[in-house]
Image 1 (cartoon, rainbow, N blue to C red):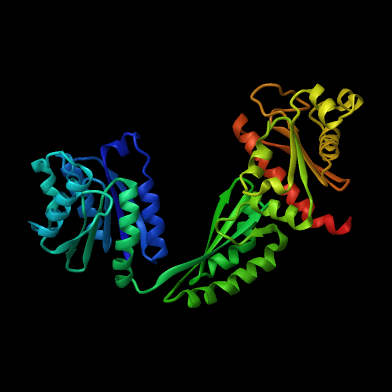
Image 2: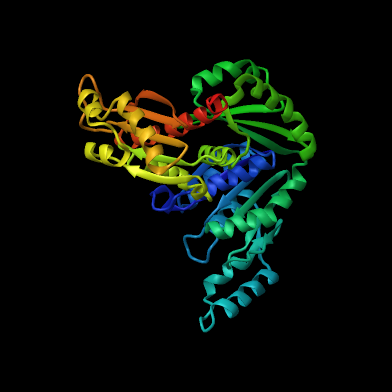
Length: 418
């Protein structure tokens, strides 16, 4: 089955409201195995909304709308969709009673104005979906093989209604569902990853692989359509096994919600290691990523923001001679920062970053975006050099990501040799 999402509201077109409903609905439909080929945003205008509905009905089996179900004159979705589908509206006593009860319970002392009763009008060929978080019910319109599901705009109303009531309805129409597993890869570029799996993508049917590039990471979602979770996982596993074979330890997790910082904190905890950071250009962002993880205090001893040369010498013991000979942004300084942070904090691991974030401060031999990242694990130290091309914010963010990748690599490949 194919569904189309239509989000209604001039405030969405004007950018006054961020359209989170579309992303939520798209994810929910994907989980049900329902394809979404188009999403539309249309303002509070009958003519344009009518055109959008007719277009959607021509190319999709199901329309799901959000917004425009309230009591005011610009709430036009229900009336417009029903007119476009040729469905008559009639008053629903059950919905009218729920509106009365809502006002008695939550709007004591307020008069129910006449415009609220328009929310009690439902399609003759369809039914209302009770709204447990507001007055406007959801609506299902059924005309032949076509379905239109109209949901309220407020996200807390829409999400609860979709999850609790629309999903079971759609599940009956779509027996097969989608099941997926995420393979997350760090330190391998997007084009490299794609080249190494191109044969799998070219020959895929069910399951499929979809790559998603993130900063310093590539996520591969394996998705199978099946009638049960057991069947879906059985289809996915051979593909996952092949990806493990091809990418090995570059895969840092297969858990959807697990992040790179989750993984490195877990690795430190498993090894009984503590860590300290010494940061210059990142100004504490590395430790901030680590502290995102609950329980990071088990392993994170201290964090030093050594922005000035004096701080590098005083706090983490970078030698004055190193700074004079090589400068603050150098391989030698990054190495001494990492080793010095570990020593100062009595930690097994030190992680450092020093660079030129920009937009100023660069020169031909040390351009903007030049960064050195150092990691020392029980005295064994590695420094990596990077030249980023971006804004100050992006250069700093790339540095943090690459620092976590270096930390993971050091924990993976050097600890066993120490």
